[in-house]
Length: 325
Image 1 (cartoon, helix red, strand yellow):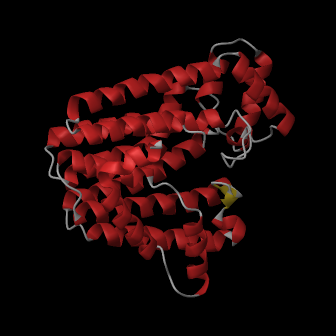
Image 2: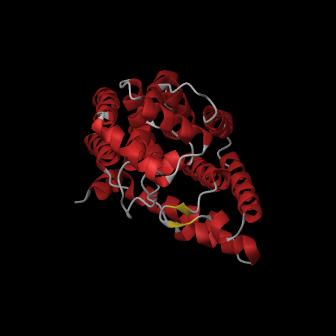
């Protein structure tokens, strides 16, 4: 059995229901809106975040209609944020497919993103659960604040690991944290259990982002973005931050400043990527990722008693840390 099948096994029926409902929600039968939504649906995706929510819900009880509506709402919010992010970043691709703004235009991307976001709010209202609605609203605010922090950090001359973690906690980890916490909430877990699930989700999300950042130092068509893409967008991630803060090469600091002010060229990015590898940046990032993996594994050992769900969540962690795209 492959890893994804093992991950989904305890919630196979519930996951199929989710997929069907999500596709229906993302369908509009006419005009430009229908075309754009169809374009986004074709992108596919493994729905790793809704899977996490359902696994955590099943750990504390069952996957109910509340869980399903919350999962759809969260995935829609995530989808809307990606559509808007591509406009902000001027990205031409998303998961190896042309982005909405590239295939249509910025106006269509922003408006369709708004439509999806409103649909997310509508869907989560079907839970009739004030705490879950509040969680999703806070998630939307945090995602936006994370994007703004990342935008302002480009102008910040200080190259800080602390700021890096601050950004990824608000941009990526908060999605996994919310999935795990809402999953527990939807199954009637106690406050303490919801809190522990949220911490697990955050550790998982940080791992996920570090793995994503490591991809940027290797060229692969599977990943769907060219090497050094983050640097081209003005972003310095964990591997290069470590390399810069633990070496005294003035020329590399100069290149880092060029990344931040958007004047770096392709050849200079290649030099900075190679420097990062030689200075141990990748090894350091992988070590950090394993530290978060250990913390997440402890939650599974301490808080997950069902063998099938224990195995599924363990496979989930392994999938995140070993994935190639």
